[in-house]
Amino acid sequence: MSQNLATFLYLIAAICFIMSLRGLSSPETSRGGLRFGVGGMVLAIVTTLLLPSVHSYLSILVALVIGGGVGLVVAQRIQMTALPQLVAAFHSLVGLAAVAVAGAAFYDPQAFDIYDTAAQRIYMGSIIEMGLGVAVGAVTFTGSIVAFAKLQGLVSGAPLVFKGQHMLNAGLGIAIVALIVLLIMAPTQQLFWGLVAVSLIVGFLLILPIGGADMPVVVSMLNSYSGWAACGIGFTLSNPLLIVTGALVGSSGAILSYIMCKGMNRSIFNVILGGFGTDSGGAAAAGGAKADRPVKSGSAEDAAFIMKNASSVIIVPGYGMAVAQAQHALREMADLLKKEGAKISYAIHPVAGRMPGHMNVLLAEANVPYDEVFELEDINREFPQADVAFVIGANDVTNPAAKTDPKSPIYGMPILDVEAAKTVLFVKRSMASGYAGVDNELFFRDNTMMLFGDAKKVCEEICKALD
Image 1: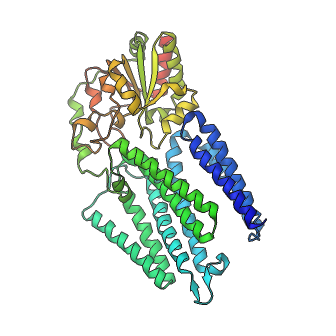
Image 2: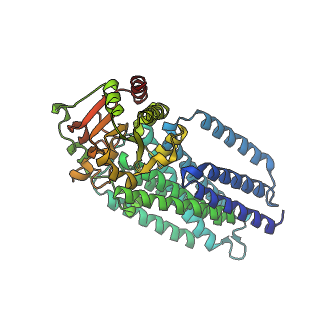
């Protein structure tokens, strides 16, 4: 295959990726966007395999079989509740791949056509690209591992902070810049692996101080990092499609992170530097002594009676719904309420669940009509007119402490104003705090009734009572 034809096919693949991003921006067009993405990737792989520079098909075939096999098994076995940590794990592999490719190019620059035989060294431009790709890739690798561990519950979701943390991060950032400069001046193995080591440490230190409530933004930002790492390695490999694709992923991830930060009243710069969500003592300060405060609890029959007589019900899904896989039972409950004449709406917070769009995917899986699903800014004004707000597993995104307690780590984050509804039905296993470690003041309000139990079982019992 000629280089001109390959470039043309790469352009087609890049257009497919752009159309994929466009389609994935809305639930109605997401399936079409997915098809564009798959088609573009197949075209990109086939085009690359037909390049004259490819010689060893056997090793490539072995890698495709192993990687494809692992991906197939994971896709078949993964639960929707584990999707956020799966995404974080995949981001770590992208970062590791960037470091591995840069290492291969550093040790055998002639094979990558980046060696200046006259000067007896790697081209300066290639060293710059390689250094940036390695730094971002290594940060993405270890940062994604920490995010995976927090989401999986292997380590605490609480922020890990210590004195002098920001000064240490700043010093390591300066060290990365200095190592890249030194690598440009004299590309040695010691400097290369020193850059890798420092960047790996920075990845840990950037994500450890970020609290659990902010992990959806972290996943989005790590997605951006992985894109920029791929883009940098695209320059090293002189692959225009990898450059374009990496830039698309990097920029779209950064834009999504900015939108989410705006929705949470966070600073995008603090996300990049790993310094937000670390207000010490906030979790302990919020909520007070919950053991001495009365809570009104009810049964599924009570909830069914209240909702059967309601004209407007707003459903607020959260991570608890995902854990219980209650989306199908929830939709059945909503259908029964519609038969009783109730208007049903679904309120989605930008960071509900543990990754962007988590709740939208679950509701779409249960065939919930798209026109019933609303984002925070579109639904919040409706709560004062709602007869019932049915909260199923959402905690931090409904916590009034975000508006009333300056010491809370979620203070300033826009929340769903469920407390404004006439009655709040809150489905939860226990009185435990949310992922941010903050007690929810909503539990103790006069208009709140707690429905303790597994979310799926509670919805099924309400359906029986309604039927």
